[in-house]
Image: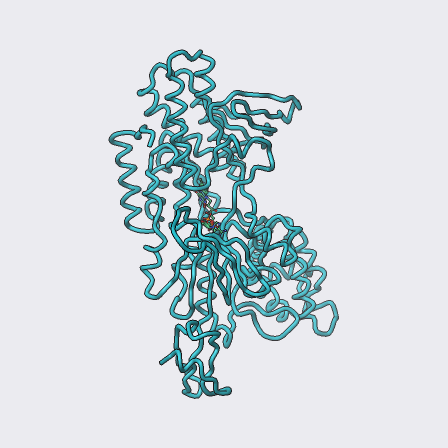
Length: 564
Ligand code: FAD
């Protein structure tokens, strides 16, 4: 039996056993080396999280070579870009989620899933402590621990209140499916309360003042959805209060959608003005109470208070406590967010990977790395390289940092000949290292950290799965760039993000899009592009049918305003 075989141990070239216990033995593989049988325990890969990053990793991982376990308190994958549509019933919550067990069932192998939350990562003993989040009187312990050989942390981020008083108690968030459902119910509550007899007009107005804090893509999309819901559906059902409804967006920066192209940002502001959505830019929220929101106008320094019926807080994300604790353990406690290298390995822990919103690829020391590459290439310490050596070094730098290529292109340096001219001034046999470093001196300043988006998370998951699938092969034939200061190459090419564009739905069947190649598109036709891309990106045919069905239902019958 494979279990028995694995327990025997014969020295190198014979039968090798790696099993910690018989139950750990789950696989058997034949190596071509010496035609001898080698049975070994498959390496345990533990994945934390079933969001964009975790699911994309699981979908592409070759599970025949690993023993894969997944932990997440959410037993489904949620298509978050459609969450704002759930807040107003344009799309049903169940249409945008796919049970994680459906996803893993499709893989021809065994992935174990446990519905639990990771409480602590113990890096020293390679264990994680977990607690089941099933809130019931069922018997049995809720806590358990799991061991790993490789840990993939993909637990996303949590809402960031910036410690603003009253936000946790009095604001809604838009991060999870439950948040979107809660918002939907509260919007209906605000309308039902506003039409109750005996209220003054001022009270009705307060109940119908919807405030969104944060003018980023999520806040803006929610404001637009809410405006459509109110004006296409609710005013017909609550005609007596239709003139008392107001929507405000509070933004600390000077413009909404300030990560988008300026044209999109202005288009959105103009559209909101036409729709009577009030945009308060340059205002910082100081505190939120049950009925009031206090803020400071940056230009005048004056404090302003406005009454509200409901506040949605959408101002960015922060680090989860379990990741913070892990960062303390590995000496990253001083950082705001967990740092990985370009291979998505957590800095300082070779067997732990982090992807998606919970981590950032540390790209701040590109110039330092470039200097190290040059020092390694400049074997005689002359401060110069031959043209051939220089070309090889450039190739390595660009593989490691694809952004450098973009930077050089932006400076109209399209190939090595252009670059040599720029560095040397004229054609020469050798290249001055300091001159080249000068040519790149601004590269660090232009590197932006990757945005916290589903696009980045999904691409990172797919990239990491590819690395895991090729791990054995690459040990023998590494394919990545040269290693600094030593012979040989890295096993893999570093992660390279491909930006495929971003959308900003603005309501009234109008969307703005920023597409690759600086192409900006706005209006109704872009809305149809949005419909087709979001339908095609659904994780399964089931959710694709449901989402398209919901959109058709909304076109035909409007949105449902029942409070369920
Ligand atoms: P998540 O998708 O958040 O997944 C985290 C996973 O970890 C979840 O399964 C969670 O249950 C699990 N988890 C949490 N805590 C633990 C724990 N302690 N132990 C184990 N598991 C845990 N991005 C875009 O690119 N385009 C968009 O249009 C877009 N729209 C968005 C709209 C909204 C309303 C929101 C909230 C986000 C939107 N985003 C969009 C951003 C995108 O959703 C995130 O960047 C993406 O979800 C990050 O993926 P992730 O896998 O890192 O985290």
